[in-house]
Length: 405
Image 1 (cartoon, rainbow, N blue to C red):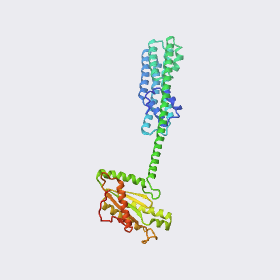
Image 2 (tube, helix red, strand yellow; image 1 turned 60 degrees about the horizontal axis):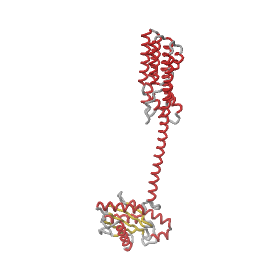
Image 3 (spheres, rainbow, N blue to C red; image 1 turned 180 degrees about the horizontal axis):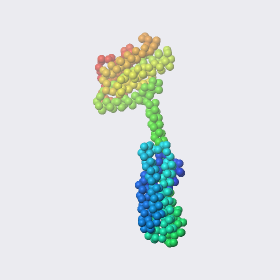
Image 4 (tube, one colour; image 1 turned 90 degrees about the horizontal axis):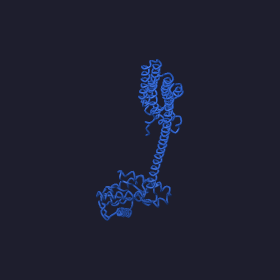
């Protein structure tokens, strides 16, 4: 975040505001904050002016020095009152004073700063035009020159320049010219710094907007990638995992089982007499039948690691990590019964409904084996189930056997 510690020039900082259309309202408030934050310097400057006036009164006994000090005090009071209100409002509105205008508060500060600096200039002009005491003149001009060098406000020079030509001593004119040159140099530096401030703030805003757009774009890209990955891993007909997702999951679970020395089971499902179903009812009905069977198989897998996928055509598979052959056969029998309970009409079979055959296999991965061995074992078990009359599981539930590739 850009800091405005160098904005000690009220008029120049304020002059940035009307031409800072590129800045957000919060950034404008930051500029105004930089004016009100060093409010103690306002008190110090006014106290110094009153001390100068009182010292001049003590030396010359001219009453207008007292009036000069009183005028400074009267200007200081409303400035302090406005600053107190501003700081209180900023504390209450931590997200920004949305119902106020930064230009209004900047204008109020500008009015107070201009009044104070004009008071300095009028007093210095009166000293040059009326006082014949070299000590007073030198004292006042030195203080004014130092204050100008530190604040860079032009108002105090406006009365000083014509007043210097009314003085008896020509050296006063030289001093006035020096003050004007000092002010001009300060203003040029101030304009450069405030211009850089606006550029930095505008760049910060553009970068924030660009970052926001990039964040949105990255989010959309990530969402698109997730959708693409989901589409590439999902069977378009049934909505469950496709062959590609199955191959990736099987490879991953095989590696995990090999590392942990755990069992890995696989079920292969085939819809009995599905060609006859398609020929009799038509392909749309066949697609609807496959969708219902896929939903039933997926819903029947109750553990998060289990995965149901469409293997191709009317074949489905299910990966069961950490499951023994006996457990796999029990799951297969339950899923077979769930599909049978759907009672999808199939007049082309003796039972009159759609059924499935299921082959189950289980392997404890060992060196020299791979996941293809498990697929072939489950496929052989499916062949045995269909050869045994269909609508059954092989190995039958309760018959424990371990298939090793």
